[in-house]
Image (cartoon, rainbow, N blue to C red):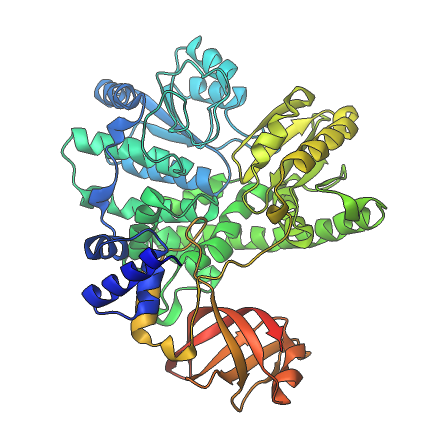
Length: 564
C-alpha cells in the first residue's frame, strides 16, 4: 500500500471511527471519502443508471406500450439456464400485472438448442402472439428475427452476450455491449437487461420501487449464477435482491429453499447459497428435462403447486449429479491416456454419448482440476458436436473461440463462459487452433491458481466491528471477491485436531499471541500433527460466522496453509 493510501486509511479510520484494517478494506475498493464509504456499505436503488441511456430503450418501451394498449398477445422468450429462466419469470410476473394476454416459451436444450428457434417463432404464430420479448438470447438471431418479421411478429431483444458484426433487425436490441450503446455499466446479466426494460416502463408510467421490489430476488439469482462481475449495478441489485429474499421470498423460492435445506431456523441466505444450492437446481431442470418447470416454479402463487414443482426440480438435480460424476470420471480417463496432456495450455475433450446437460458442469470441474481454458463436447441429435467452454484467471475464452469461428457452426457467450457447435471432422483442427491461440495469448499468471490476499492482519484485529465492516462489503462475487486474510507465525492454542470420517479435515484452535481463534481447513488434516508438535504455520483464510449449540462466533475458513 502506497504512502498516499496509508494516509487515506488513517483518515477514514479517524472519520468513521473504525480500525485501520477495516479502513484498509474500504480503500482497496476505491473508496476515498466517508460519504463514499457510507454509500458503498448501504447501496441505494436510486444509484441505478437511467435505463433510457441504453440504446433502443425508447423504441422498446413504445412498442411494449402499443402491445398493451392494443391488446396484443405477448410471448416472453428466454434461455434455459438460471439467467434465462429468472429473466422470463421476472418479465412474465411484471407484465402479468398489466395484461392477461401473455405466454412464455423456453426452447428445448436438445431439440432446439440455445437461443431463438424457428420452432419457438412458429409457436408464437400459432398462439397469436405478435410481440416476442427475448431475454438472455437473440443478439445473433438475425435470420430468426427476419423469419418472425415475415410472419407479422415483432421482437424486442434483451441480451448481454457479445454481439456479432450484424445486429438482428428487431424493433429494439437492448444490449449495453453494442458498439453504439453508451450505457455506463456494461456487465449486466441477461435478467438485468430485462429489468432495465421494466424499470424504463415503470419510470414512464410513474410506478414506484415498491411495484417491482418482489422481482429483485430473481435478479440476485441471475447475477449470482451467471458469473457476472459483482460491481456497480449488479452489486446494488444483488444487495436488494438478497434483502428481499431474506425478508419476504416468493412462494416458489420458499419451496426451493426448503428442498435445498437453506434458510431454516432464521439463517440468513447469502450469495453462496444461490450459487451452490439454488442455481444448480434451476439449471438441472433445463439440463435433464425442461426448464419450463423452473419458470413455473418462479412464478407460482400456490404453495402446494410450488412444492410439487420444487420436488421435481430437486429430483432432476439428483439425477444431474449422477451424470455429472460419471462424465467427469470418463473425461479424466480420456485425458490420462493422452501423453501430451500435461504439456497443453488447454483442455478439449469429447465423447459422443455424454449428456448434453452436464458438459458445462464438467467443463467447470476440469478447469478446477487442470486450471486451463476448457471445452467439453458431446454429439447432438443433428450429428454436430456441441459443447461448453469455461475460462480461468481473467483469460477471455470468447475471443479464443472467436479466433476459430470459420470452423464453427455456431457459438456465443462472454469472456468467462461460452457455448459452441462444430462438425466432428473439424474437431482436430479446432483443437490445434484453439490450443495455439491460448498458448500465444494467455499470461503466465493466468496459468496457475493464485489466492490474492486482502491484507495481512493479526488475530487481535478481528472483532465484531471488523467483521461488521467485512459483512457490509457483501455481496461478494467476481471483481469483488470475498476478502482473504493472512496471519503469520500461528501456533496451536490447545484444540487443533483432525476431523472428518477419515481425518481429512483440520479443525484449528490457534493463536498468533495477540488473540486466539478457531477455524476449519477442508482437506488439510495432515497439518494437524505439525501444529500439535508446537510448530508454527502461516495461514491464508476467509472469515465467516459459525453457530454451534446456540453460540455464534467468528471463525476462519482456511484457504491455504504454509508449514514453517
